[in-house]
Image 1 (cartoon, rainbow, N blue to C red):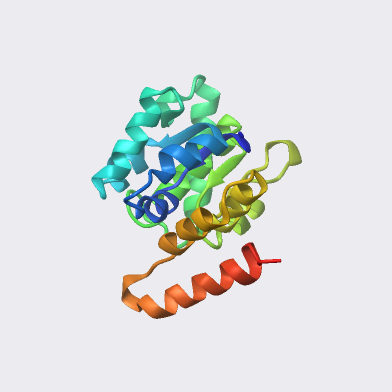
Image 2: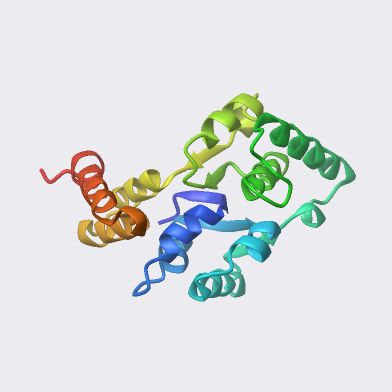
Length: 200
């Protein structure tokens, strides 16, 4: 059932899937599709704060040996640590909106860690992240990073034989925006039915 052997997990991806209260999507679905899940300590300690059930899912994955919290201290060599700092600096400069310990910081440190440690996948629903990875990090095919967005996640579930109804529920809840309830619900339904999983 493993689709991605190693992948870093972003806060936005976690939040969106963590909105489901009746099933543990991070633990039971992401945990099934990813061999080992990595989460940067910045995200774990500063961004994954609510809902409490989300943090519990991450903690249970850690207890099972399915997830690890990583940061500069978990890089093994001085060269890797130096490269990590270089990557963080490069990515911070690439986006003027990125603020240290603030906006986009979780994505910045996660991408830097992925590049240095050779983790090929990053589960994030940020639209422009693949472009940033391609421009600044994916300079060689062997160590390139692929951003797995929610659409990719749903398509992976489909390919692996998960039920349409449960995947549709995951997609709809993950894309629910309380500020524009009807609009987000209609958009999500249309994308699921037309693009992701048309009924044949």
